[in-house]
Image 1: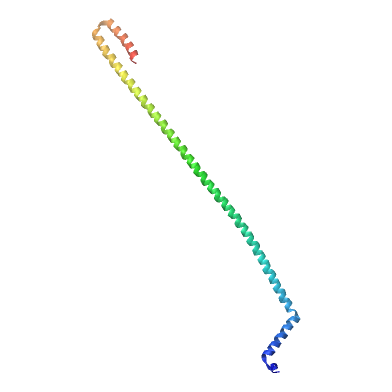
Image 2: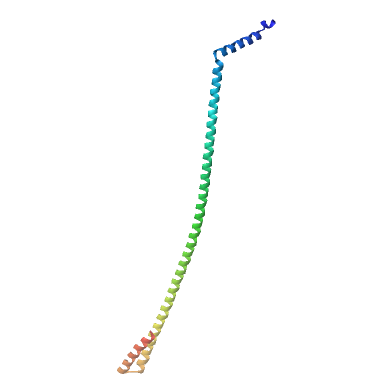
Length: 163
């Protein structure tokens, strides 16, 4: 019976009595109810977190597909732009070549016209010089009024033939 005088024994007896009193007043039910409520709120938060994660994954997949579509569209636009640029460059090259060809033809035509005009001017000058020389020679050889009429008629026909 020495344990009756031990302080540890009486602390244990007091603790058991305290627990029995708690049980008598229903404190265990209150504590278990609070723990159950906390468990349910944790489960609800976990379910909400899982739902939000699924929604985030869905949004990520959607945005990923939109990004891929945008990249494909951008690549198509770049390819189309390159094709258009090449086509425009070829058209410009063709137009420039055509322009140069037309300008060259015009220049050649102007040169030919200038040559023809120069040849005509030389022929006309030669004809005038020949007419003057002929007139001078014929005047010296023929004299009088009959000679002048003959000279005029000859010169008129000569001018017509030379031009």
